[in-house]
Image (cartoon, rainbow, N blue to C red):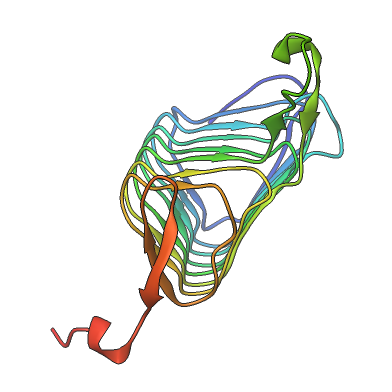
Length: 192
């Protein structure tokens, strides 16, 4: 792992961290027991000493994932995985539950630009309400999740969906914008 700035990294002895991982910023990064951080992952806590990235036990950050707090907080629960080249932007906080699967090339944005009035968007500021994902949720590849969204426990979000509003627990959802299609049922579970 390559470190820069004054970032503090607290990694469990059993954590497996690739040499090409970059950790930077002024905050704290906590990696739990048996966490795996694959090649070319970026962990950036920004300029705030109070910013944190916490990855709980047995979770995995796959090749090329980017976690940037933008001075906020990012927390990933036990046995969750963040897919290849996925991005978590934690301005208002991103909280990922346990046993969550986030497919490759997903983008979670815990902030949004204000765009009222005639002033250029660049100068209007941002909202930062954050994102919360319940335990056991699954996001297919290339999903986008926007600021202020709460995704319920066990929710399945189809590949390529754009989640603009909160989703209830145990729902099958997909689309642009993402919509709840139907509740998950026992028939959705296959015996292999």
